[in-house]
Image (cartoon, rainbow over all chains, first blue to last red):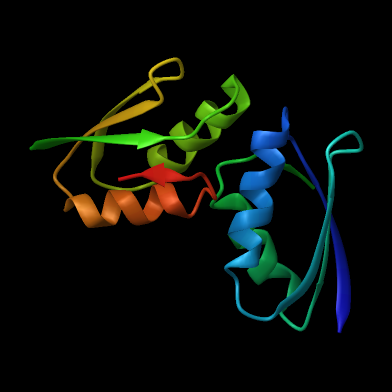
Length: 65
Length: 65
């Protein structure tokens, strides 16, 4: 199990809930912790970082790498 | 060319911009018109409706069908 942290532009709880929902649908994700104020998305998963990143990008949100 | 209208829960301009960005990346989409107040996403495309719907769903937004 690995833990990855992404910085994602999220403006409101609708934004953060959308990211959470998209990641919840992704098989192999164990836990998602989103901090709207810090603009962070922390994911516990067995998946490679790139797969998680791709899913976040598909939400249309800007990921600051 | 077809035009499809979807009703999507979007709370702020960050939400609507994310949906717009996700659809812009989809090849075969000609025009996207989003009305945040009406909660509508209007797409001009040669793609089947289902493909567009799938892309919107991947944003994590709730689509009211």
